[in-house]
Amino acid sequence: MTEAAVPAPRTPTGEADTVEAAWADYVAAARQLDGVRRSAATAATEQARSVAAAREELTAVRERLAPQQSRLRELGVPAISLLPTPPEVTESARAMAGGPAAVLAALRSARDWAETADDTLAARGLPRLARWPARPRNLLVYGPLALLVPLVQLLLFASAGTGPVSIAALVVGLPMPAVAFMAGWLAVGRLFRPRPQDRVDRTPRFGALVCLVPAVLTTAGLVLAMLPG
Image (tube, rainbow, N blue to C red):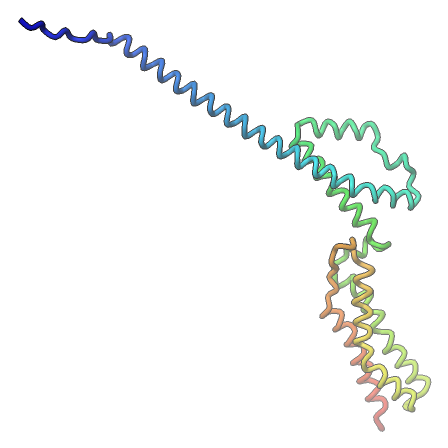
């Protein structure tokens, strides 16, 4: 006789449920741990980037402040006035207590202040005019240059009448608007440039019109005055 096959022992239903619950808890804990690990790695990377950026900003601010300090000393500012006061140091330390990100924000703010100081120091004695709208500011240069030659022509005509001197002045004055425009174009760039690396809006069309109109009106008036009545 052959022996009957003996069935394998079965796991009780309660034990199977316990294993499945333990497995689910393990998977949930592993996922949570992986999320925490990823968040920590991301935070560490962002913090490292903030630290590197803060170091670069600190170097840039120091390089900008050094020549400003020398310039201010040359202008007679006392050395003690160029150092921060204890309350200012305390306030700055409080603002940067939030970590590398707060330090980076404070350094960027300091760089903006330093750039503003550069604009003021490098404006060559015309800091307010350099910030005017381009056309009114440039009119202060183009206008006097445009009126110079017509004024000389009118004075010569008033003193010499319709003689050869007035005719010569009229002929010589014909190309002078172009000369006045070029002189004004150069002067605007030298007078109103906030910093050496910046470009100034010279408003060339407006400047050419300002230099041309007085010359045209003066020439037309002198020609009409010289015509025989």
